[in-house]
Image (cartoon, rainbow, N blue to C red):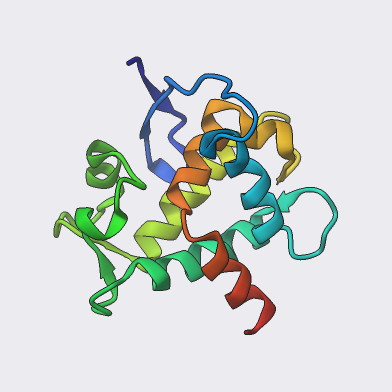
Length: 151
């Protein structure tokens, strides 16, 4: 599997597996961008803005933080992040990601996925490998949807 370095947005270089190929319709991988769009696109304009992605990141952080200690370790990330990516995002090198480190990592991946640099992600950008990597970072789309709708 090829490894690709995603731009150093906010001084953070992310390593993301780019083995994501087009998936047959109906598979989890093919449905993930659609589910992510439904969960994060709170204004229903057909795109995810940086604000919407940030709200989803905060909601996902809370949902992933199983022990409620305010940090995520590799176990809590449940494969939502490459160990090398986590290590690079872990600015204070304590072996965990706090909310700021996690949202900075998500923001950097959002920027990498924003191919046309318009500050939003559409379905095509979510289907591309950088967009798929962002979707994998935010696995709890239902938690994000509930948090954003105030439920």
